[in-house]
Image (cartoon, rainbow, N blue to C red):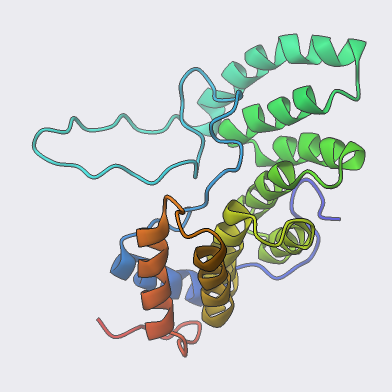
Length: 227
């Protein structure tokens, strides 16, 4: 199992991989962190601060006011700790309350304290190993610590449990692309996603990702795609 700090010795991104991904993402207009939390709409958001990766960025324009910058983890930590207090009290009564444990995980995910979030998600999965929502969110937290192998391992497990889960398929595709430059694997996940979820809300964006991934299917780390 991946350690909470992500230090399981698995492969991490190289500078050339990060550079290549950044160039590709500029072509499709996406951020490196474009992953979708399964529990983004559930309790756990800190004082109205959107969860990282929960939604795509809204386009700017002359009539759209600029969005305030995301608070730093140092600023979010005391807010998260404060909101965690009543939840921790509930755990004293029932330490195996998976809903409370998951909410704590979401809370620290929103605070960008991914290591602590993973710890709570792991506790949920020990009690409810088939909880695909929590496993997907934990995989995103692991991926945020730049442990692509650990994250993909969790996504593989999630999709063994629920092969047609739309959010799991979307995120594994993004992780394959972003973390491993596995364009073919990403395309396979996204095509399956659209096949089994024809009304998927992000279908147009997924189709754009598929087109760009197919265009750069032979791209190697450190190799700049043609503009």
